[in-house]
Length: 414
Ligand code: UD1
Image (cartoon, rainbow, N blue to C red; front, side):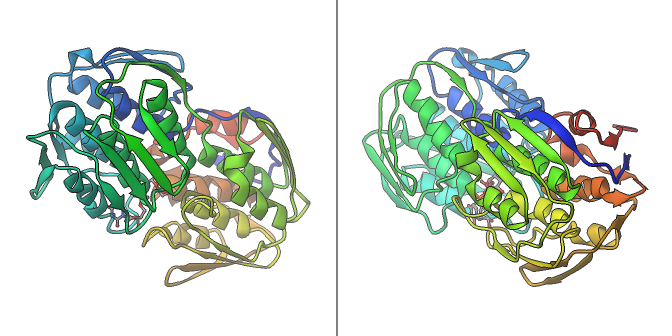
């Protein structure tokens, strides 16, 4: 329940990145001894991943923000659908399990409903490396009877998940792998760094990743990068309420496109090595045309929060979504608050209004849910937001963190 209309002011420390720790947990399967992953956020997607590791027989210890994964007990290569349907990130276990055990059976995964979300790139990558894959109605059944081998892979699209699977499969494969048109998202950089700290031989130059297969990996201690999507969400929320925010443990370099849009909207944005300061103007200016794109472009995950911010900016913002087919299911709920929004194919056109009003709405997906919260914080009156389990997948204690910035927001029911 959110009572809007208050400026957000204060400081926050950004959590470790969900989209980095999930592949790091998969990678920890590949090593011969324990790894310690630090800066692990408290999120339901993290809980789901740890549950999968335990179901596979791995030891998992969680102490505050540090998770120790011991892969020595690994005794299974199948992940049932009840576990994988909780999150799409579970697809990344495929490459790691195949590499480690020569087989992997995983229930077809869930995740946010953002369109078709096919798995062809994941399967093509693994097949090129020697995997045999059978797709049934609800599972992917993979074997690599003679082990995985290196390959020259050119991705049709720089898919984050398929790039992660390729790296995980390649790091202990026989021979060399080259991944062209690889995803250049910072979370992939984190994965490669961790694997190299474990003894991997990976050269990651962004869109091309070269991997020389090694025979074994040892465990290591690794701190996950800051969550750039959490950072973008809090910055946009502060901007939408005319507030000011200092974000600690943020990585400005990973947020260049987001910070550019905030500046175009009239915010003052200062950056120091691991911090970002934002001061919003009295009224935001619409940033104009923004097109989502793979990194270093404007991230698709920040499109929904931007639409909520644009709903109170002066002028018209056009957000073109180029990564997923359906990222606009939250727009109807924005309209319910009085936002002037229309959708034309893959474009959302948002004409800002002076003030949004309160409304009771339901989260449709993780980032669409974040847009709901931003809009409620910027609106007059009291809004109730339902289906907040979507938010808990990607934002730690969102109500406490917004409260600490002066918002009136409480969790009424789980
Ligand atoms: C990851 C992120 C997600 C982010 C997305 C894009 C995680 C856990 N999730 O998702 O937050 O929004 O990157 O930055 O890290 N595609 C295919 N075939 C495939 C795989 C993907 O056509 O086999 C398409 C998808 O349908 C989509 C596009 O490629 O249109 C991008 O998807 P991808 O980069 O794979 O996203 P995820 O890894 O699922």
